[in-house]
Length: 636
Image (tube, rainbow, N blue to C red; front, side):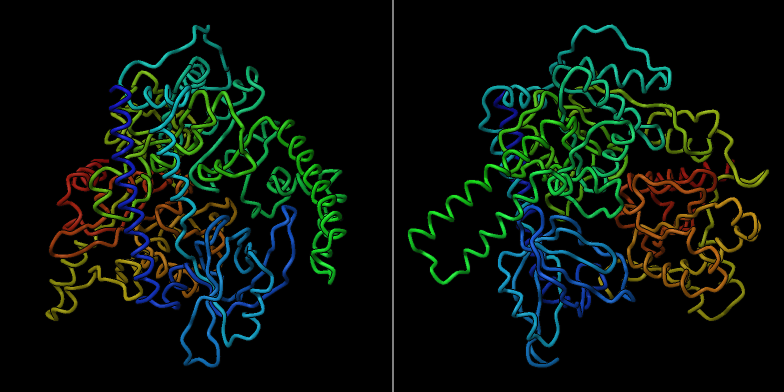
């Protein structure tokens, strides 16, 4: 593929991204108008009846509005650092029409407290007079703007960015340095190969890490070895969670990390390497804070606008700028790793910065355009992830169908197989849990380590089981003449816009888990601190499972050990026992997005010792993947 072909591919990416942008913007408007604020709250996209806290300035001189919600409503939500929000007020009484008071962006959000960056303190006065106040996620132009700019920059690139563009979008072999292989006794053979390929790469290298194969361990070692040759690198990922995870592992290794964005982590370990915390801890910060305070006070004096006022303001602003530059230079010059999200790499505080090497973790989960954002700062690119697990999130069906869901990592694996290292030894799962995933997704190349191979809870236990609701429906139909009973275990559309739900299957899921805990023994379960993951692809089912977990008294002693979430929510995690409720059960054989097998790969490979799958074989096994999976389980 020539430079012109690369530009053609990028132009197509821009077209598809525009489809996604327009579809999401339209969808946001429709949902806001039709679904209503209470439904948005149930989805985790709004907080209702919030209380207003203080307004203050943070270390970056941003105005912050603090808001709180009732701890009784401490459910999952989608508010996180950088997300755009709108404050919705109802004036007068409950019958009044809600309206948007103003907008802001999230600086911090946890279970019941949120800090929002706002443009003007005077805006808050509108909230004090309101009958009720809510805050909801609003359509975020910022990320799309950064992605469009990144595509345009690559299309019009000169110099090294143009060279990288033409290499990434071509099939010609990537260049490598001639280096003698290094030995790492604490890594396995494929991990060692991965680190050496990173060190040799002139243009691009890819670390393909299937579940449990130590991808993060390999990446940390590659970063550490790269820092022996370079003074500083940039490390990015799609989500704040992924950036925080790799940052924490780098800090554990003794590497000095400067984390740009996401000051939301409350533990000292995470806070200590955020840009905001380091900025505030700098010896010059008290002086800078005093000067900023003096500027704000001067802005409010009556003689504003006089020559003397302007002269004093210019002196204060000049001194503040001088201190800000000095603090920034100190922070960036002493950091070995600059860590941020892909979108965060466009932050103005990184203006003009260049890095020899850019590392992108969880690269398979990022839109291709998002991966291009930090590339203008790099001489070479290292990607790590697994394109056989969670794909990028694409909401527009047409854009997805035409290829927007294909990540840059997936493109590079196809274009440059010589740049890929597949990690092959996994340390998480019992061999029988691993084997089906290995055969279907990784050409049978995954091998269980000796310590994981026979990992189990009970002697003579089958590590993976399928509880088939189709067989239970048959039993009911044989025993009952009432046709309503035959419709048990059927999926239906949830009334709260979360997709599908199957309440009978959820109840069976909890009963199956209860029986297995009894089989283990309650005391042993607690003594050995076993943990459980309940997974469903559908949020409505997840919410109902959480409801059952709270309601059923049997689980009271075990609730702290049981996590319930969607497949996406369990990405990167593992549990001793995983129970999957597949939900779909219908006469038409429709399985919806269960046909995206990568999500099923994630769900199944979270389990260390026991995997229980609850589902209707008569519906699911019309698909060859589930038919083969069930056959595999029955053969054990």
